Image (cartoon, rainbow, N blue to C red; front, side, top):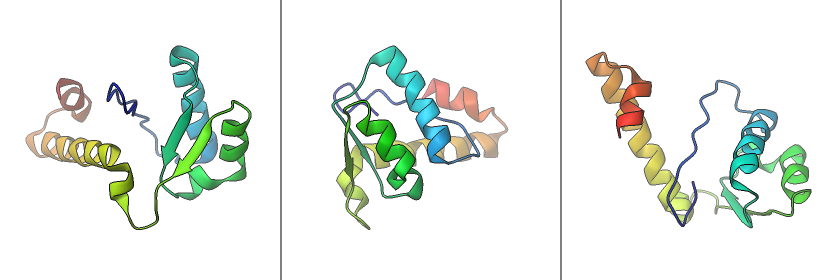
Length: 104
């Protein structure tokens, strides 16, 4: 999520690895350019050597949120909560969750 514009980018995947995330980020960066900094949680997919080298080779500062303190990245955590709630409601009402997310 871009903190200035609050524009989110969503990766829909069952493969939560450094490789899938860096592939996704490559697509975002090719459209939007490189950010100065990226903030992530401490998941292994974000703390791997592959992720470190990917960001370092592009001159992107990598900040990690404090352990057990999701408020560090509160805007993203709130977005994730809203996204999950939207998907749950769509599933309960029989709507396509993709359409529900697009209409949010």
